[in-house]
Length: 506
Image 1 (cartoon, rainbow, N blue to C red):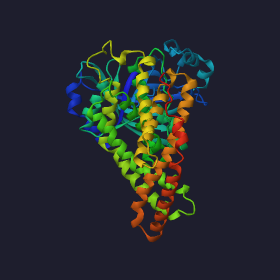
Image 2 (cartoon, helix red, strand yellow):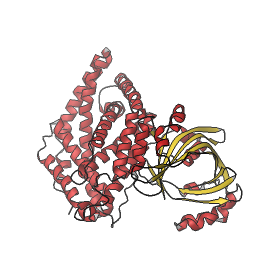
Image 3 (spheres, helix red, strand yellow):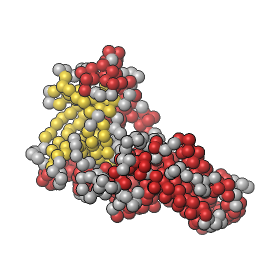
């Protein structure tokens, strides 16, 4: 199992990074230069890729190395995957030679399959000049560092490669993030989420290569024997993966990608808040997450106004108003794209990833025996769930439905309670979690619409200085939304009562 951090390097910065004094100072020996030609194979039906495998044959200095890798686990920017390799007598793949090394029996049988071997054909090729170092970390671990420059070719389509790979065979993955941060201070880097195999397969499908899709949260898989700390890591990595996987779509101004990126960020911030007594996040992590929340919010607010809120206004053709809102949204999306390409965004993600994967909250190598983090998650999670439930009860009990700020705080409390229930659902009775989460979701939706109206009122006020037609429509829309808010707020009682006093924490 390899642990790897991949980073994009600006093409015009490759040479400066190659000559970086930090790499020379920490290197265990001179760097080694390679000219690599990797040919990726699969069946016409892509049987290997569909099973979560990639197969390549690498030509390197007169040798042929066959490698099989699994798809990486959902751990945010950190890639963890199985990797097996063997030397070949020539350039022709022989996947059966690796079957004995592969532990999952289904994958081993696939590699042994005579039908698969007979149907294998080259799909795409990666040609790379690689500069490789063995790096000593500050903690005495050895890291592999590789700087790649080249291209991936699939038929008549090509994509350039300019990236840095930092790999750790065993030990603390925080060292990967720290080395990346140290290099990032001198050369602007960006996280690279896709493997070269994934990029090659994307090139095979022109539509897939051109259209970025939004990524919802993958299910969080918790096991009964997990400690609370292990559960925290699994949930945190899941949130980070959702956040990071939607960055390409946000850069293409995909509205749903931005929404899902914000959901991933909100889930992560809710998790940090839930564990605040047990896991102390450093100031840089808290401030970075808060900063990113603010950066994502403005574009999303205008998207919601233009895309859904205006449609709820009766008696108005909002074409001019929608155009004005879309113009505002476009400007914020352009600014957001600059933000996500800027060095500070990469720095925040590296700091969060290093803190999470490196378990930086630990005072030493382990946890105190009496720490709740060391206890079984199924038991130790219950006080955390109970805290979220009590906070929601308190918000509901003190809620004035006409108070927009109070409604917003209640909505946040409902959201946190739902996130907590869904994250720990593998360790809770399904017959209780699903109805509870369903009621919370309905309450959240009702409060969310009212929050959208409150945000819309503020945004529409910004449009009052536009042309006369937009100004008139904005005034009408604000009046309609004010009346709708009053009516819908008065009908919140049933949704609030459906969750007040409800418990899944036992």
